[in-house]
Image 1 (cartoon, helix red, strand yellow):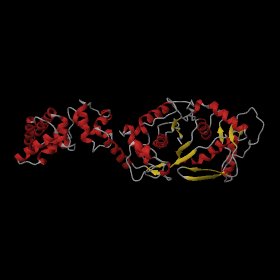
Image 2: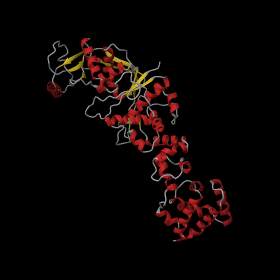
Image 3: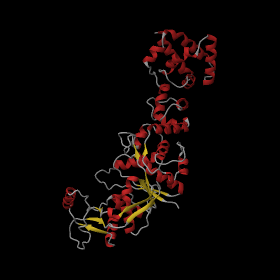
Image 4: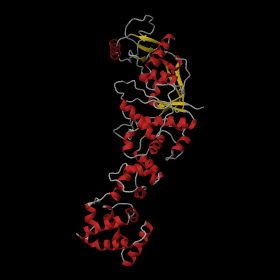
Length: 469
């Protein structure tokens, strides 16, 4: 059966990677089963919800390639998909529950409830709404909230697709508030009404919502609606064993985008934080869709590991061709590349060493920057009088070359070294510093080919001048 699943973020800031993993698992399931992935915006926190945060959600989802089938900007058969635009529907559903005897109007003031809570605390007891208005039949013209008339006996439970059977004694439940006096629903009520009216058949979310699920099941039953399936996913912890936060890791999609990570690498790593397919670590997007399943999701918290994340990212970088990476790397460069062909060749020389597109951009900058930046320590050590002759010999060799590819350059230099009685160590580092400005770079002959003959000669001339003093 093709499920209807949803991702329902609150637009109160950046899009957290924990939320992205929830979205990803739902998206993978929808794509694997031919289901429908719904995006809705739970913006009832009016003090913190902003249009800017809504835009961040859309931009992040689009950048990651987590396309939704229904929701803002897409098909909207259940429009609108913003909770603040659905208040009339919540009022209608609340009235239905009241009429059926499953909910009631509570006129208790905040002051009265605060006083009762203080008394319970002084007595060392847990405060539970005492049911003051539970059986009232009058309807005074006073402010009120709508409360659930929760059962006090029996058990509410479900077979979780990830965690197995979960049961909650109903005696632990209380008459929770469903809707405030201003008509804004609280989380559990708004969530259930939306899931019912949008036809959601599987609810997959973080296991911090396990405590909400019994209340939501009671609401589904009170509304006379079939229960969706539930899958509660393990939380993501930082290296300190606590919930992942800014203190221990980058936690927003935007941060990883700025760091030069690839969308497929982010999704790959997040998929593995709570799910496995044998020992495989690196997956294409198509493989994630093919292999994902709830039965291989972990039941305990996953731990964020930056080194593993970087390994996955580097693996995905190497899966790209230089041509595919070129626009991404170009956008990170401080110096404009003077030709697309040379840019792609330059990227090809650093792909085995770079982790991100930012790394790659920094590593190839020297190819295009004129005048070139020199590491003064490298100049002091290698561009010295003793190496001037070697650099002049190399320069003369380069000037006489016809073909200027890596293979030809290497063969010619090797023959020249043998004829001159020199070794590569006599020439390599002085030449590297002259050509790149530093002591570490891609292979010398790769560098020369990417630079081209004219620029190689010009840089060797500059290096000779420095060596000559």
